[in-house]
Length: 197
Ligand code: MN
Image 1 (cartoon, protein in one colour):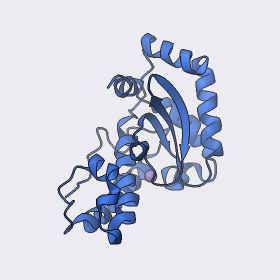
Image 2 (image 1 turned 90 degrees about the horizontal axis):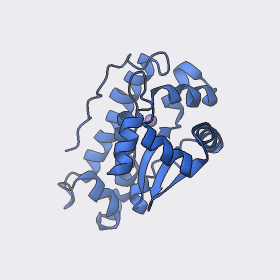
Image 3 (image 1 turned 180 degrees about the horizontal axis):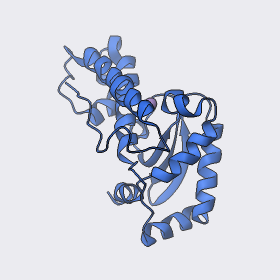
Image 4 (image 1 turned 90 degrees about the vertical axis):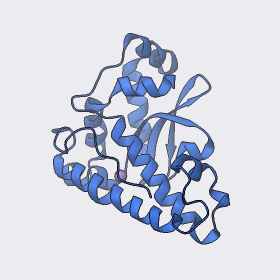
């Protein structure tokens, strides 16, 4: 059975960039609901003991009746677990080494932020915008809904949840404010760790 991973910080620790009520509902209600539906779908199948990543990379092995539920809710579970771990109260600035990698791939840090924001603003609906590591190159990629780069055997090192439940209580329709606020809480140490993994 999959369980909700505890957050490594309090719900109000990301204030003022993400408010406590949004964090609490997003984590304890939305994320929990994805896990509950995932558990209900895999329980009783031959794949129920499989770790999440393996499950998502071998979707065709599931019975047809649960395939899309596992893809959707398993994908969302994976995406949310990822999302929580790359943010941290107060944020962390990139190391000089990692800044050099960003500069190499995107021109310079400000240009990266601009490109990422432009992609996120153009990502229609409830998708995610991510930075993907492909071989040694970094690329900004938009995906819809539950899709996870893992399903395409790619590795994400940074991403943002663009579903309205991630920001609506505080920012309402102002997605751009949410994207800009989020810059202040990115844990660049964690992003670098994922890059090097
Ligand atoms: Mn979400």
